[in-house]
Structures are given as C-alpha cells and as structure tokens.
Length: 430
Image (tube, rainbow, N blue to C red; front, side, top):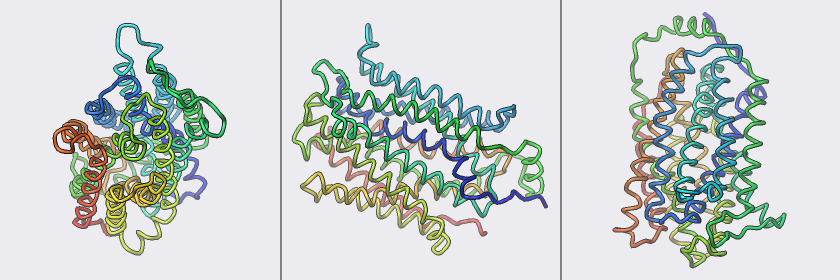
C-alpha cells in the first residue's frame, strides 16, 4: 500500500512559512480595522456590520477556491498558484486601506475602508484555504496534528509582530501615532500596513520555492487504496465540530470587534476615535493581541504532546474553557496592564482553535477532495461571525447600554459553551 513519507520538522516549516505572512496581514487587520473605521467616522453601533464583509467574503470564496484548487495542476502545482494570487491581492489591499481618505472623492472614507476590508479578506482567503489543504495533502495521518501545530506556531509568530508593529513604530522609532482631526490614519499604522505587505509577499514566495506538491495521480491512488466513498458525504465528526466552531468563532469575532472600544472606554475614559487617548488604547490593544498570538505559538509546540495523552477533543475543550474564563475576567481588572493575564488564557484557546479542529477533521476527508471539504468547513468559521456581526451591535445598544466591555463578557460565555460542546465529539480511532 502506498503511504505518504513522513516529513522533517523543517520541511513542514517551509510548507507553512507563507502562513506566517498571511497571519501578519490578518493581525494588522484584526488589531487596527476597528480603530481605522472609527477614525474614518463609523458609528460604534455599526462597527460589527463593517466587519461582516470579512466572514461573508470568506464563506463565498473559500469553498470556491477549495473546489478549484482540487482540480488545478500546472507547473506551479495544485495549491501554490492560489498562494501567489492571494498574496499579491492582499498586499495591494494592505497598502490601500489606511490611505482610504486619500482615495475619497465621492464616497466617505469609512465605506472605502469597508470595501478594502472586504477585498483584503477575500484575498487572504484565497491564500489561506489552500494552506490548510496542503498540510493534509502532504502529510501522513500521524503527522496531521504536528502539521497544523506548526502552522499555528507560524501564525503566532506572524501575528505577534503584526499586532505589535504599530506600537513599536510609534513608541520606539518615534513615528507619529496621532490621528488627524480630519480622519487621517496615524503614520505608525500606515507604515505597519506597508511592511505587512512586503512580509506577506516574501513568505509566500519562500513556501512556493521550497515546497513541492504530490501530482494528482498519487492522490488518486491514495484515495482508491483508502477505499473512501466516491460520492460527496459529510463526515460525522464535521457535524459535531460545527457547534464547537460556532461558539468559538462567535466569541473571537466579538473580541476582535469590541476590544479596542472596550479598552478605550473602560481604561482610557474615551469613546472619541480621534482622541490621543483612543489611539493609545488602540496601540495597547495591538500589544495585547500580540501577546495572545505569541502564547498560541508556544502552545502549538505542546499541543501534539498533550493531545496524545488526553485526546484531541479533551485538549480542545480545556483550551476553550481557559479562553472563556479569561474573557470573563476582563470585568475584574482595573488596570489596563493587567489585561496581559487574560491574554495568556486567550492565547491557549486560540492556539487550539487554529489546530485541533483541523487535526480531528483531516483524516476523515477524501484526499482528492481536501480543498473543497476544507473550504466548506470554513463556513463553521464564517457563519458565527456573520451572526455576531448582525446582532452584536444591536445587543450593545439595546441590552448592554453602550458598554462594549459586556460584549467581551458575552464572548467569554460563548467560548465556554464551545468547551462543553467539544466533549460530545467522537474522534476517529487512530
């Protein structure tokens, strides 16, 4: 029986290195999109609606890209052509987004910013989904957890630098961090987006030139030997994971959208997006997001060991529980520097969210259809974000009395529900 050869750690590193650049850009988007949109004049109650463009775009793009990449084969390979196209488009969006006021003639900058946010997320999705499929394409089943954990490690590294860069440029290198009264994005944020575009292109090219792909006939043979059904089917484990993913990503979306206004109001005493205090809060949120991403990178190295002892589902459930309790703890802190502590717990949850569901799912998917299945599974990420985006602004206004810190508490409750749901997953036997 034909079996994929085991790959070395550095071969797995090279094949996932481009994901570091993708996450660099994604971290810049997550850490700065809210304050950029608020600087452009968006209302905090409508903020989640602007963020909706990201999951909606992902829900449409990822299954299409997955389907297409399953059927692509040229001199660049199967997944790598999509890495290149996605990286090029994402880099353009990274350069243009903080410059939206300069592009505004007949349309308000916040709508241009929202449109560029959509383009950026669509482009990131073009590159991101094939990276998930590539791990399952290249690695034998016993290395799936390691493969997705290495991806998580690189995601963490890229996200730390991407999240911290505006703070570093503003506080260490003296680049202006003040927003203009006319809605101009601070220079430290603008230059961070430029740097992110360059890093993204470099890391994607590294993966393209250091990683080969198995030809279609080899994957066809593997699927035949594994006796996978030819018709389309939904693996039972995917159905169980949907509920876990719903609660996890509902929580993450709420955290990404509302952490900046929550920290600004609770710890800096302002809701004015053009104030120096608000921009300082935004810079500090970038540091906090970098911390949880850094923790996720460390956790990624431990996940294969812990999962082997406890099982993947127990490992994932514990990580989500820790993350949920950490989000709830935002209520008890009076000093913004103390928020470093809950970020450690959130990092543990984030590291598991990026690795464990894919490790549990990969061995149940037909190798020849890895791209389309991973693309469809992405709906378990996008749908909860869409629901959060539609309703969280209304919840903030009518139930939380315009206090965004309660949106963070809501996120904590949701993540704990995800931890409970994970216990009902029945894993495939090794």
